[in-house]
Image (cartoon, rainbow, N blue to C red; front, side, top):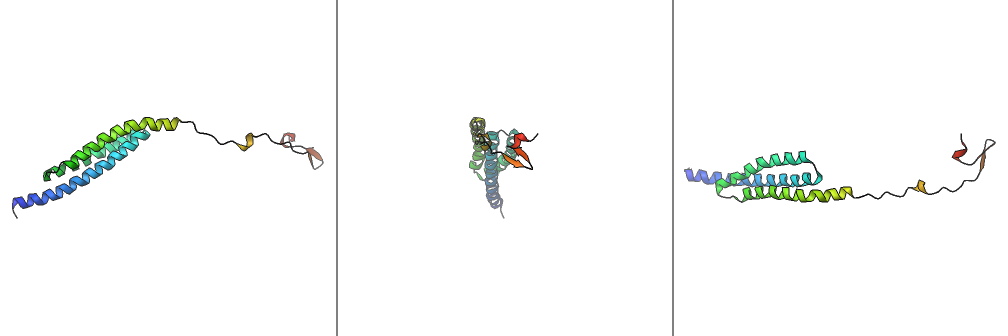
Length: 130
């Protein structure tokens, strides 16, 4: 097998490795968006760290002359950081919104109870127990 044949076969393998890296990088970018929106900096940092490795994998598609997976991976994190920064104030506004509490049944005034006799002692209600 000639050198050109080996290069052509390896280029095909590197293209698929680059596509897998770009897909993993996009999944990490989605995790970054969600983590930034809910205010979890540790998760966002971890996902960004995994994104770096996946973006490096997406660069292998350059050996076959295809740079689109690497550009998609890089654009994914940029979009994730921007969307996460815009989503955080929206999530804060929803968290700060006052929650309505259900009306408690005990808050309604109780009707007076009729007096009753228990063991020869006249009782009216719980307040007569001392």
